[in-house]
Image (tube, rainbow, N blue to C red; front, side, top):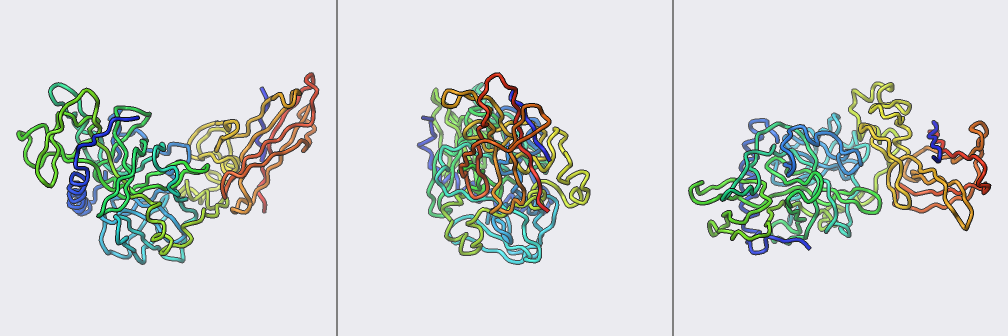
Length: 456
């Protein structure tokens, strides 16, 4: 197959007794989740800028974690090793034999392991059927301040919460059993004696595109951060701030809501209801995820392979995006197919770290890009104009079994593998290659391409 291109400081709600609010919320979540499971219902991520029920219900297209999330009963889990996935401890009991669905394929659970110091829970699946690939884990170095992708099955956005004529946020809405993704930033790490280290995200007033909060049903979903060229699992969704109410007229139980400003609202603690004074600056509520890096030793003891980046040949990559029924039809999902109809075959999507179910014709960003088709351009190098090709390359040591051949031509008929190459390793799976053409005549017409071949 040939890919050919021609050159042509934040404000924080600091005075709230955070753990009191959080602990109450977790107890509330456990009670409600049991009820949900009995009813067979599951719910999804709440957004600041829209209440559209179909918003972000398909892949974000940037390989930021969606491909690593599976469904477990009414909730979610994330594979972290060939025979293990991780989820939240508070969402399920001791029922061995339940099914974990990963891209439509069924995996039977045979054992579970509860963390003694956090809300994390690891499930083991039948070894006769390992996961084709699994999520890389965050080391923790980029957790704080990082842009995150958050995935869950919570509620839609509900009724507006208005206090003294001012919009404060929205109550949790109706159930729709839909998985969604959103974005946020990890603002800090919270240490809890009961739940260990937690990653906390503010629900700021539309500070970024797809700004999100969580609600009941999102527990067990993954929070991913970008580290060393790969989106990695940094947290498992746990809880949210709350409950809230305007005043005692709304009852003693209050309600849970996605509030971007709690000023002027009351919040419940173990000591009762407290009023948060209304100030000029928004005081956002937020959500918490159990920090994966803080539990590395426990995870490694149960699933030692989880510490390594998984091998990922073409067949394993296919199973991260397609169901067994789709995989049975090579015309839909084979190396020469183009499922998303974006003009890029699956072999090239695999070779250049693109999403085969997201229609996008993206060229890699210069210097530090981590996905996209080859960048072919003219550059002045040591005073001479030359054609260069910059592209990502999978490492064969990670199971790629493909070859990349860079080529230049002056007439589109005769192609030559010439030039000098510079290779920089990104991580255990990817490296970045830049090739400089040997021809320096500025008056000559030159073309470049990268040819990708799958080995038998």
